[in-house]
Length: 423
Ligand SMILES: Cc1cc2nc3c(=O)[nH]c(=O)nc-3n(C[C@H](O)[C@H](O)[C@H](O)COP(=O)(O)OP(=O)(O)OC[C@H]3O[C@@H](n4cnc5c(N)ncnc54)[C@H](O)[C@@H]3O)c2cc1C
Image (cartoon, rainbow, N blue to C red):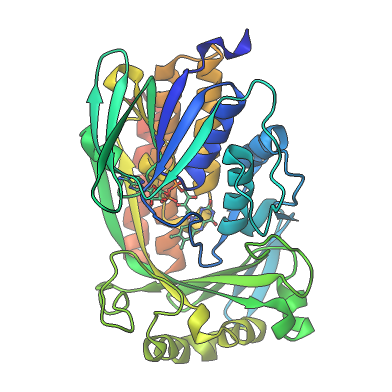
């Protein structure tokens, strides 16, 4: 009975975490799902990027993951440090992992991809729908047929193909093509800062440095810049002391990010310079400017990062006015609906929340408009709250008060009406 409102056929655009969470959930409820991912690699590269997640993602893994593979390090506290002067702990529980491991676990369950993390993927469950992951397929068009939607996509050679499904889910991130095609009104902005990121093997660090960062995220506030660091497993999912990594993210002002996003070969990247292509001289200059302010263990960690393990990402955000289009046959989820500056580390959690909420819609417990109202309100609040935390952490007081004022406005707007527009 339960599965009767689940769509029979679904195309998901975007094969990252939001797409895979929705794909796995739908497959387990009998829907036939095709994920289209523009990246041509069979397994997407992850740069060993750390992510944190919470109860929504945990619930999906607990109910639908059959790999039996450990997915994260469970932390119960967060450590805060101000320059070299003080530090304290807050009781905030998070699950710490790497993007690559979560991706591999979801792929193993979704379409049986074998990997170093999951060499023997689990068989499908009884009642599962069919699940396909098509790499190197870029969505170019959507056509609403009033009882279905036809998606058109091209492969690497420019060969065009199409599919028709009951439902299309846009899980295609910050630069969502689905969002553009449905003409969703969106605010998309560059934050004015970038995130330098890197990892170091714990075994390459002194034991007292590893102990300082052990088992929890650490936020280190410096002069007009700050860093977040936490332990993560490698993509292969081993959690031993010899394989675990310490991952750090360093937010730093860059009003004009182009020089930082110009790689060793002179190519300018639009968002991220991958590991191995960051100019060592730019990285060394960044390090030299700030190293003297850093608490000793943080300085040890960051200075121990190999030049070819550093990468840079432009920090953007975006928020969209609605999540439901084409009479309910096209939905936006994850970063495609709302991309937050990453300070609260809730992007994966948001995507998992979208998925669980849609589950309630498909089980008949919630109307689609109620789901939309909820996710759009949450998106606006977190979009603004992430700006407040970012601006505070990066030390711009005038901008901080301005953003805080706008945040209060968004909260009041949320409380006194402002239901999301229905598509
Ligand atoms: C510095 C930084 C730190 C972060 N830290 C965290 C953290 O701690 N915790 C956390 O949860 N998240 C974090 N994030 C965010 C996280 O990386 C993802 O943004 C998040 O998991 C949501 O992903 P998504 O699947 O919605 O979008 P994305 O991961 O952006 O995926 C979109 C996918 O769609 C594909 N795509 C795009 N257009 C098309 C098209 N036309 N056709 C086919 N495919 C297409 C893309 O190739 C991509 O694979 C961080 C981000 C940054 C920049």
